[in-house]
Image (cartoon, rainbow over all chains, first blue to last red; front, side):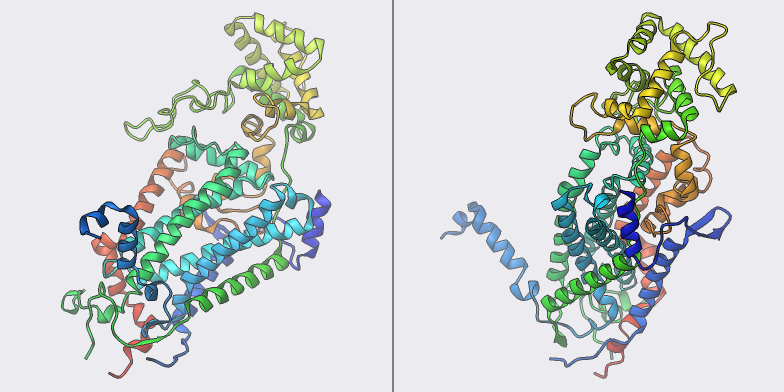
Length: 59
Length: 211
Length: 310
């Protein structure tokens, strides 16, 4: 069964099967994976409100 | 038919109230207000699309059972699809929520739309928990033993036993998707019925422009 | 001049073309491609499940100490209370006895469920004899034997058994040694999951037993930063993203007064429940509902609309 997991992970271009790294200070710690997801939410929100939307015809 | 006999007829009453509150053009529109022109508006439909992917990938996993993905690399791929659909689902839902907050989208008697949205958020989190419980690996074992303390502390652990994998599977695959589905459909119907909320500066109900 | 409309009325102003079905289909295709890309790039974690077999083979002293603790009544399960047993009163929220109100609906008596009954399923005369000695003794005597053996084991943390030089341990060492053999073979996993029904789907007993382990189960979780005081509620095994949407719930367990409170679960869960209800009621809170007007992010969202010439 572990060989299936390894096969599946070998197919993955980026291997995340290792101990996580953590960012933060004192009691506030966040894993890099979670930080990326949370940062992506902020970035996507900012892009969504700043990037111009194509103006079509009006009726 | 006389008015009194229509009122007694449940079918006629349902048909009449449905057609009165929702016209076909509201349900399946081919135009929208001209102010609906920002990328922030696509995050509702992206959230729905993620839910569609969750159901589709979930059905694939259902076909082969809960242990399939441990023993098959194809199964593992579909598990990955299901897991990443969850991450996308919550990312898009949160961006959608932020957008709706800063647009004060509850205006114009749209409080129910906001509330059903929060309900959808909450029930999705509970559904996600049951999903993590049925991974049948170490992570699910750990989550089960930790979550049980939270549930027990609130008095519901006697009924929702996180250590009972069979119960978790049935909740995750059957009951909770139904609950989430009903709430999401209700939310979407409210959006279609009320229309997209007009911009804040055009809102006549905000007294004298003083906020 | 700015057109002012009643937002509760249907919009009768300018419209633009919209294809709701096409939008939905494009969204599904986009999400499918994103999910496929992420799956191919990053895959997903699958740390193998642990068993009483893997536990006893990896860390036999820890297994032996925990099993003795079950007999002595000193483990978490043995002293949990509702919904498993009557050993303790659960935490309360003011006058609300939240944990206890439903009673014992998932009965687990660790000494009998995890040790005595499984031993009786073995076809082992020695195990059966030691169990019979145990059952013939008073509850008081059982407690004395188990507590004495637990103390002896704690003084020899690497040992899987201790000789009974003072005749204080009764049948306990024999029971625990037989249980260790049973666990190492995998038979204990089977016995605990089939105790109520022959085809198992409920893993309450083995998981409660595993959760009582201090040196094995919790240690594996700590290494992956999954413990409550490591923001574990948010984390995933390996380096994958976890459940970032549980950030506020996880935060509760990192800060005082919750961090060191024995009532932490009740307090954090209750506060999160209240905050969620609060989120649902945002539209009626005076300060919160005015925030979008005070911080006009909407001016970016509707920038083109506001700039239209009338």
